[in-house]
Image (cartoon, rainbow, N blue to C red; front, side, top):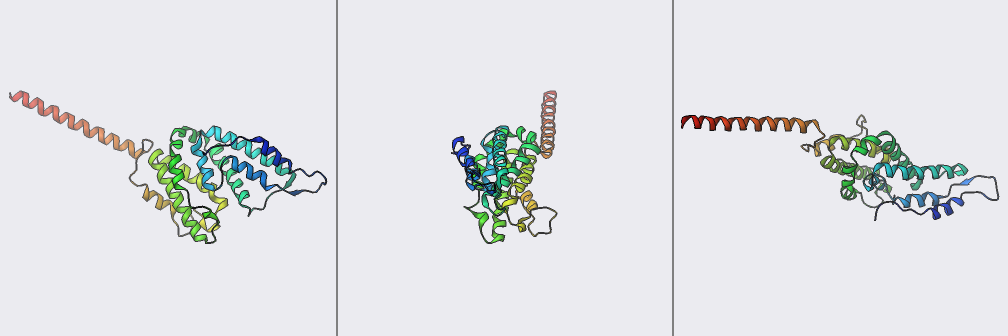
Length: 245
């Protein structure tokens, strides 16, 4: 149900509508062109952009997004771009940010954890907020939903992939959601806002260990030393018993 749609005929037909045939005056970019491409990736919300991480391998996803961005940028050269308040325009900006974070900056790290991220598909779907939550007029409510959503992403990723990947996803996901959210939802740790999301997330994930975390190795070393000590004690007891006999 979720993935990518391959249908270039419709894209080409809509793109052709951006060409001004009887005048040299630029017109507004065709909203339908952007809508068609967003629909190809089932992008109807910012959550669906993050969900792309779980659909298939990062390199394949990034190649398809690269083609998407190239087409939109090429067609936008001959028209006036959509207003920044346009929802589709915001989602497109989020797609670009996703590409920069997941396909350029953190590409190698995420490819290493491909197997793990794809296992998060169901969990990430469960994390999604209510329909059109980011369009609600109550900005405080929007920020609260966003925080719950980020919390869900963080805890789910920590449980399956470890804290390193969870922190990586936290930073990149926050950036992707940025264009959609009101300014008061600033999730910067250095911010003076009264929402300390990072503290909340770390507390929720407290006690969860993963093989990629240093605490896991320390615990394993301690457990191994304890097991070795017990084994030595058992052999010592057996040896003493044999001597007495």
